[in-house]
Image (cartoon, rainbow, N blue to C red; front, top):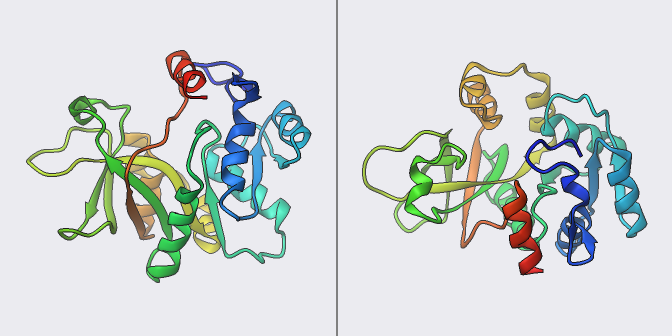
Length: 230
């Protein structure tokens, strides 16, 4: 609720519904069990009022990954679910197929600890925009899945595809616990990208290529775009 660029963002009205409720509805279409992890009671109340499952977590947790782990431990303390998928609450129109793509990648690639998604750059300006995170993949010609070698905010050198990272993750439960137990890494601190901690720890991240990145609401202009789309 304290988002600096868009205060109260999770409950922002989009076509008559709070943004977090739209995100929960879309995620629920995946066929998976869905719970909203929130650090604010207002968010929990909004989701529960719409008929959804929500978990109130410690607002002082250091990262979104810690919040995911805390919620998973609350809703599934016995560890019946081997995979946890995180869809950002500020993606109100994310296709349910995105969660399924992460789950399929974890099923298919036994070496994969964390699954994520990438899409082609939306505009050539993405290449030099530090707010656009670029994924460097070991991606054979014609393949649509590959192992992530690095993530960066920097401009990539040379010709070739530039993959824009989409912040949706699928974690093996043990990998998520290991990740959250480790301190921030040097590269993570330098680039301000959590996923670099996983790579420095030796965890394997794999990515699937999707057709288009979902709309992410980060500022007032994005919110107006979301309302227009609704």
